[in-house]
Image 1 (cartoon, one colour):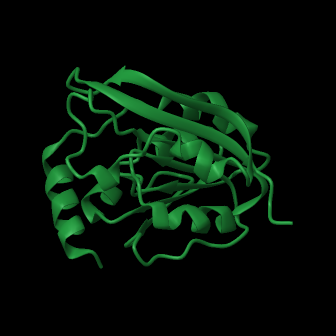
Image 2 (cartoon, rainbow, N blue to C red; image 1 turned 90 degrees about the horizontal axis):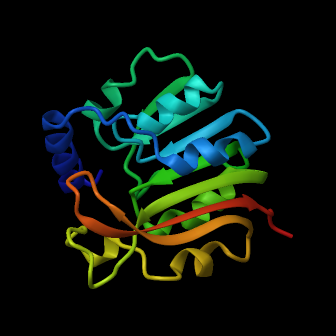
Length: 188
């Protein structure tokens, strides 16, 4: 397991309040899913998992932090798994909806495609590198490059929503974000 990552996230989740604001594109595009099996990758304390479960989804909520996952215990429709996303394999051809917000590990992109059913929906949103970002992750590998979402997902997905935009972070800092929603076309 990525011990350093686990320690860092455990420390963060032990000292911060549970975020409750659902990522907006989730509310808009989750209803496009053709079934009710959802995967929330790097779910944190579960704001998106909670929302999906409240909408009737059966959610597999994955995170490296047991502290974060403990916030989801006993919630109907949420099935937590403590995993290291460096090595974890997703169930194949299993999900109608996959959500990944504010977590970037490019190595899982092919795993996401294998995990989605044909016609499944991917909702992805995170930060984009821009020199004018006021407070972005210090490690550039945690940031998308401009145009990367289209380049990565454009061939295997019907693009429903694709946007790079300026927004404000939780402390009011100006940051560029990228969001993508696509319907998986499946492999030919």
